[in-house]
Length: 436
Image (cartoon, rainbow, N blue to C red; front, side, top):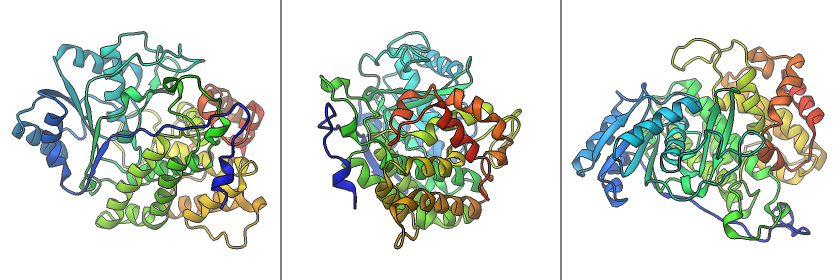
């Protein structure tokens, strides 16, 4: 195992890492605890964030009833969009500003939780929409301080947003997603009720499951924290701090969950064991990447989301124009990415492949990239994911434009274990067009 050697000190590199996470309650029926938990956080009037498709669900009804029973007044904001943009965040910010709230409860997928996080920042610390995003898109201002208490209740098994200080928002003028990262937007508490996953359609389970899988592999194969520069002050240590022993623990177990339960969870909505375990895997994976950061598959996924021309995923709400779920945009690049990055950290890639259920008994270091890629491709085929970028209408001719867009994701690209340039990125996209 290459764990200990991977974190060997480097000249001028970090010598420590920071772990941050919310209090987490996990188990079936735990949404009924929301009211008491919110009251313990000091909430007397809560903003309840959800989306139009969940607003009428039994999950949101259970939260409403729990808040009421605990004496917590609540006003609902159910206008959250899938893959939210800055305009939507500013509308949510206005809702917070007009409501005299002392806390936020979010019930939904990553889009709901990320909208809530960002809205709380702009509500408490008004600024230009790009102020808190990293260069070259934003001004790179840190979130100045704490926001309102936040109780996050995920309803999908993938994003892990309930455990992270990250908010992914699309900048409308550029049609590209960027990340606000701050310990101040880490939810105070998360309630993870796996019963929420029972009603999810197959492609939603698949997309969120591949997202959690890629979170875990990216964490495990990320640049070691000791290869990031040492910071002068603790507060300057970024959320994306590189692979570390804490994230390793959770990433490995999350990959084992995916190996055993992803195909089962997608194929059978009545397989409660599989869907419960995927919810737990998503939480584990969130704890991993929230304290490490992702790298190339996520950095590249934002370019795919921007440039896909007409493809729309099934099992999602109807709409006009193209739509590719985040987890699908991530996984289409992943086999090609790991073939590239494995050259810099073959032992780590083989260990990740082993956790994901690949046969690594006779694999040599030079086989690492192909072993990881082969296992991911096998899962894609079995579950019915599009065959690479070509499966969503992109081609090798799009590689240059994809690379140009991806290059703006500097921090995530810098978290990869292998250095690369724009030509390398274009080459990775070219190799991701088709896999079988």
